[in-house]
Length: 311
Image (cartoon, rainbow, N blue to C red; front, top):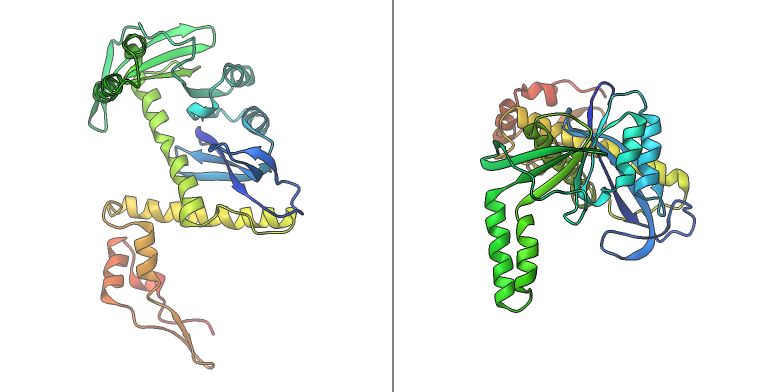
């Protein structure tokens, strides 16, 4: 991550039923389940668009402790942490400010620092959606307020339907109406609203990384019997995750990502395998579809499938 400025920071957890892993401790996961777990700390580089660190933590270590540790390790690196709304707190904002690190922190809608009457004078588009933005200086940094008119209409329609069903009241509608479609972000960066909004949206890469780790790579439970086993397991998981994202980058650069997923590519490549005759090793026949796929990636088939193999 050397020289890379914007880092998305997030925490998750995996379960473990092993009695020998000291890292596994009782704790609540995001779904409120109280079980022995090992926490995962993931740093994702928005500059590289790939994960740069995966680290196991004791199951009882959460938000502030984890962030404080990483701040000390990255001191003087001119890093901007892009956080999740679930990690938002004034304490973390002060901690990052005092350490000299930058931060982009989305706030939950009930934070008192949010001024929903803020004038939204800046306008821009993001992925085809119109966005309005305003900002003001606060004792903790700059408060950016964004409004997505399309989202505002959707949220308002859902709330009106809830009022009609008797699930919400008219008074609540008046109170909550000013929040529809709005996103508040606290940051110590003095930058155009478009840049702050884009960086926050780019942090979705860390969510993709966690989803890939747990669902595609089946890293949702830890089946090891020692602390050393946990670190080894994390080492393999991180390298697998990194290779997955580098493969995704190849597909993106070749303009193929919308048509071919990483799983599709690996499935096609798995059709070519090594045959060992004892005295000689050869590759199986290469299907034309695989050759075409490799060429579309900007490679020669011989780059992946050499004609001569070491015995």
